[in-house]
Length: 375
Image (cartoon, rainbow, N blue to C red):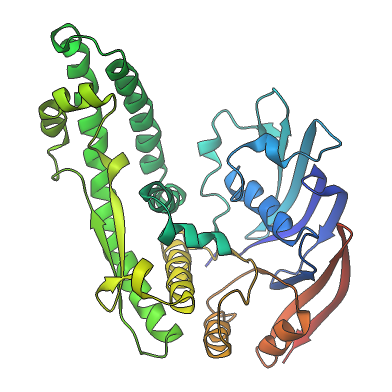
């Protein structure tokens, strides 16, 4: 099993940080402080280094400090005892730049999957409460880190989809655009069928892992289920696109394809959104993310970096205890945890035989408090 951890990070004009540099433990890093001090922003910077984007904001420029026109994040990773320096820089009205060991990436997709990461955040509730695009992005994000061919197919699919939608919006007579639609529908059919095949195959393993983890978190009291809701039959996308042309032309966009598929979440055979408590929903979301972690570890032969934001959010003491038991050093590598109460976190990790560093955030300044081994 390959080892992966972030040795240190440097931030310059990133969100509420002017300039800071932090050295991390290769095991557990606990970042505490009051709300608004930048705990989540530190995790977001790590997310940028691993996945070239924020997990909080869609727009890169939103992450620039108000007193600057640009930000820079630099991280030093140790991957199986080989050092890699990753730099992410964003400047207003300029293209984002990602560098590995001082060499620019031609395509950001080349970086995805090299430094696998899983994040558990209060924002995960969007997966339950918001539209299907959140659930598709979650599924696509997992598969993209695992499979570069899937990511390439997804990128190409979205490009062709945008071209087809642009053509549909012109509201031209169907006969005049039929030839071009034939080209688009063939391309979407080939790519979309591959995307669906990979999603279904992946979910067979993923759903089983989710169930196992949730049973532990719930104390064997509840059963969850995930169902894939497809908009087209397997290997039939091109045919169904042809059949839906009149409808799509009238509406002005493509109504079927993997971009319209969804995941249904159930607890004891009832929709989680309507019938689960916040604690049950949180446990379900943690199960999704820890199943993701397990699959990454098994398929990539590496322990991903794990980010846990606002650790105690909506979890009672019993579920927190079971979660801590799951986060054992045999199964997990480097972990970053944020919370407002460091004493509770330290108490949870007592007797777990893990090195950890404590960091206090105050006035957007990171202060290392201690480095300990809990046994």
